[in-house]
Length: 112
Image (cartoon, rainbow, N blue to C red):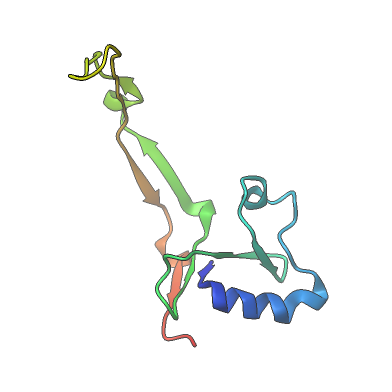
């Protein structure tokens, strides 16, 4: 679930007496995200790029990243830049983010 910083600050203030911060065992906390835990089932994470007054509900159990077999992290041939003695290579991949159950995702707008 994503929210603007001001809304999260208010939610943290309301929840602070219960100490509902993300558990250190949470996968999101282990990779550096901070937020609060709601009722032990939902993690609220700040996203500064989320539109104002909007919350997204994302159930990550139903999202997958599928790689293309023909472009599965392949290197390009070496290229020499005009102004350097070094060479450059690119690592290319192609894939799709797939949601297997769109009905369990959600969005709320017009929040204040």
